[in-house]
Image 1 (cartoon, chains in turn yellow, green):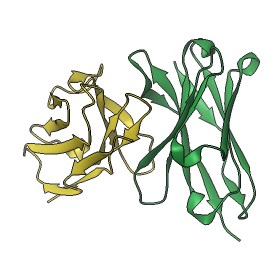
Image 2 (spheres, one colour; image 1 turned 180 degrees about the vertical axis):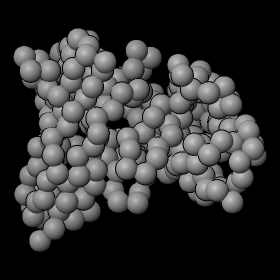
Image 3 (tube, chains in turn purple, green; image 1 turned 120 degrees about the horizontal axis):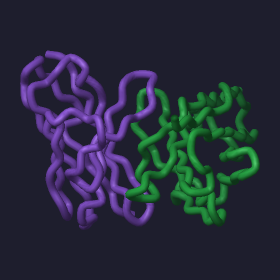
Length: 106
Length: 120
């Protein structure tokens, strides 16, 4: 089974900062990588699919890059609404989520 | 608009079974598969499985093979997930989600979640 490893597990930042979250696959998954945002008590929200394609309505300060085994989610100019937990997910050959990155206010 | 409405909170004893429902509306049910994802308290997301609402084909995550059954009922646009031989570590919020146009296991629309508590 192809495992997904996210880092860091926790990230502290301030409004206006730019942050990068990394997700690594144990084997190549081409670009079959999605990013979700989850807020406490809510279902996850799909932000990015195919590693870099932004879902409709998602602000352009979110961006995704990568292919193969290494992927990044960049959030530029952090807004108060962005403090949440972020998960990567591979969606080829079944699916697996990363363990999550909690983005906290510094 | 697309909605997935799940059944309510369940409390079960170890060894029991639970069946969670997920009623879809706002789209053609048989055109999009349904996935199931769970989240234990304070933990991350765990993909459980996926079912085609078109032909009933199922894919189960290895952790749930043999203990979980997914079904659908086209007449009522409802998907079901049954988990058997429950253990305390099955305590979690269980989500159903509709597959995206871009991938069977890619989920753009989610139910509100069903809390299942397993405790003696």
